[in-house]
Image: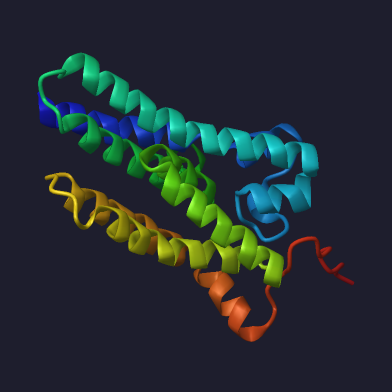
Amino acid sequence: MQIAFLLGSLIGGYLLGSLNASIIIGRLMGVDIRNEGSKNAGMTNALRVLGKKTAVFVFLFDLLKAVISVLLARFLAGRLYPEVLDIGRYAQYLAGLGAVLGHNFPVYFGFRGGKGILASWGVIMILDYRIALLLLLVFVLVVGATRYVSLASITSAILYPLFVIAFNVNLDESTVPYYIALSLVISVLAVYRHRANISRLTSGTESKLGAKPEKKE
């Protein structure tokens, strides 16, 4: 039954994560955001295509769906298996991974989603707020210095597993290897989802934050 619960945590997180706010709101406004701007179903493109108010809602929604996924898995584990100390941690790792996968590959929208940065940060924030704050600082500094949101996201993603290792490597807990593994998966997934941005960054054609998209003749 514990294995079924853990699998359910992964699936539940995935189904919640698949609720992509920018796609839903865009469709309500008569726009498929995946065909506009950078064609990414995320907050930055929502800001460019749908406006500031919509971007704020997308930010909150995509963040909270990941937070809720992790907290719900943790809560249910405590209620269903109060005698098993580690199952709550395993459940929240799987639920968090599911939320990120759902955002990136949403079952409701043909598996074409966003890049999972906000969803990932929501998961990270619940697992360890210290690491979340460090990554936020890195993100802000890189954006402030370069105005490239993608570069800030990639940098934060690469640093995430290093921070997890630094904060947990000396802890004598059986769940630590799984936590590190989760951080590596989230990091690799984030970098992979930014592969087009990496190509544009190297060629100097990546859009900067606040830059208006060029009009086609």
